[in-house]
Image 1 (cartoon, chains in turn cyan, green, blue, orange):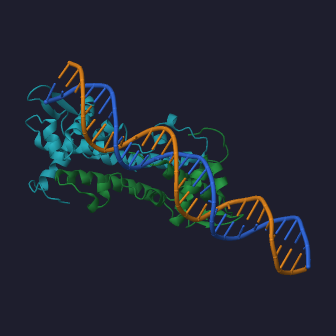
Image 2: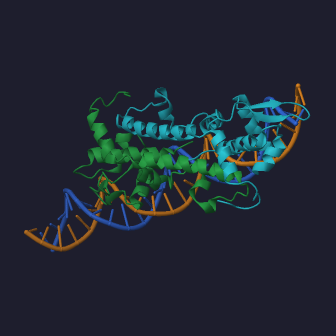
Length: 149
Length: 149
DNA sequence: ACATTACTAATTCGGTAGGAATTATCATCA
DNA sequence: TGATGATAATTCCTACCGAATTAGTAATGT
């Protein structure tokens, strides 16, 4: 079971904007610096997020990124799906047409994957950026350069 | 989000044994034929399952495989973990030591991954081979060479 | 400054191949 | 008959390979 780093970075970037980008645009450089991802890579990620409408951009000097929707409407699920396409760990669970199997017992297995997919989606969709932001604030800011868990 | 084919084949193989291997040993050849996976590949997978104690084996001519535990004690989760190591889609969620981040906001993200991992594990551990076998039987056997969903 | 494309190095995945160890079975022969 | 040995069937275990994907950089356009 594996989730791409892109997805992870995307969430971190979005969270960064939610926390620090309330009243100003944030440049890729800032966002990247705040998340220890290389600017070039983060830019690539944000381009995808932009296409999905999850962030809005302003071009040119003093330009930058802001959230594209209210933060209580952006869930972890939408972010992950924007990057990875879907949250389904097994193609055959995504759609009937992806399941070419001629072995009947596979349909039982398929139900297993569907249940798991459902659990993933449910959990991911239940968490909004707003919630995460609040968790972040609540846990106290500062302590930037330490490894806290 | 991606799950390896090995995991999927492992589940299918195990289900096959649960259904058809009640009172006899099944050879890799049979299992592979029943699941449309190449014998060589399936053998590799079952070698791993064997090491994990999920199947028991008899070597030599007339040898073969059987379940290594009662089918109501084998869950989808144990099978997947036996093959893929763990069910955690993000390394940092697996253990504290895997999380090297110095950025505090990552700890909030980390909680997201932990919740998702938990959801996956819960769903996977809730389903036993016995349950799947019953689903298989209940849905009616036969109709082997058709694509049913 | 953002937008977009191209490139690449490394890793992982999916799968194959092959040989060694182990056992059942059956033919052979004293 | 009963021991013996060949052989066929089967698991065990490692090594390997090609293709795809990933993670990330670079360069270029607007």
